[in-house]
Image (cartoon, rainbow, N blue to C red; front, side):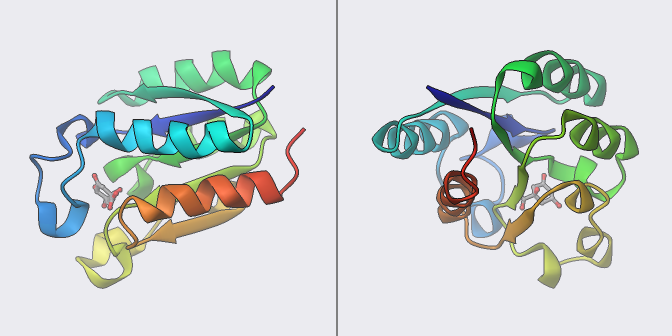
Length: 145
Ligand code: DQA
């Protein structure tokens, strides 16, 4: 069975409570269930992980990437400055898709910069939970083996 990682960075544990205008009203648990449900339909197993700590995210990706076929990641604010996460994603040699719930291009200037997106095959933003389902389709279409 194909497997992917679904990784969430800092503060995404508070989905449902955080500004719903930007991030929608799904809790992280509901968002993960939604992705898992869709993935199940196309025969993909999803391994989820959230951390507020950069190093924990790097540790988890390093360890788990050896046995998976792709990664969906919302790095939260780490998107805008984490070169260690960028390096980590590059080093996996896996197709990665970066997702943002909010429309990062049309918010504060610092959110327009993503240092992690160049390690990814695509960046999807502003589509709330729908963005994650598109990411899944992209990874599936990318014919991950
Ligand atoms: C976010 C956008 C980031 O700028 C922000 O720091 C987040 C969430 C999003 O999903 O829209 O925590 O990645």
